[in-house]
Image (cartoon, rainbow over all chains, first blue to last red):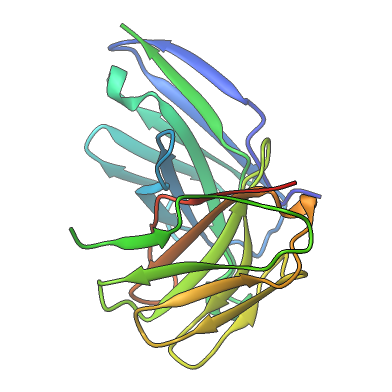
Length: 115
Length: 112
């Protein structure tokens, strides 16, 4: 049973518009969340994180929103650029799970930004 | 360039053969991890090492062993490869618990 779900396997967005990638989780003990971006034949690279004490975190064009009651987080990319085309992974950890070292990853969403 | 280096990048094995995947990081990170990625699934943790001299099982440790050789190096061994272990393997490191992980570019392993 997947604890971290990304129900949209793929998403296409026009360049310059907003991309919204969603992530749902089932484990209420998760208290730290990260987003990674992955290009083909490369390893994931860290994008942005959020702790459960916050409901929003921004870094440039990237904003992550956390809704703890709904067990839902989303990544907003504004404006979207062709270079943002990649697979995006959501990951979560619980402090009680060996001091939070065990990150659980979602299956990923492939974003295509069309010029 | 600083980062996480994995070798080899590609490998084909026959069922029953053994293989060690190598990983080294030059960022002086304390913690290192091994993941596998399969189609339609996220990265799943195989083993991790919180610090030099310690290793712990992750979500899918069966069929694997690890060695934290020193602070820089963390190897993953398949003693008797099985087709179910065909996957892309990623090594990662992090400076401290709960910080973002730095990943290598992966090893693509096929077992026939």
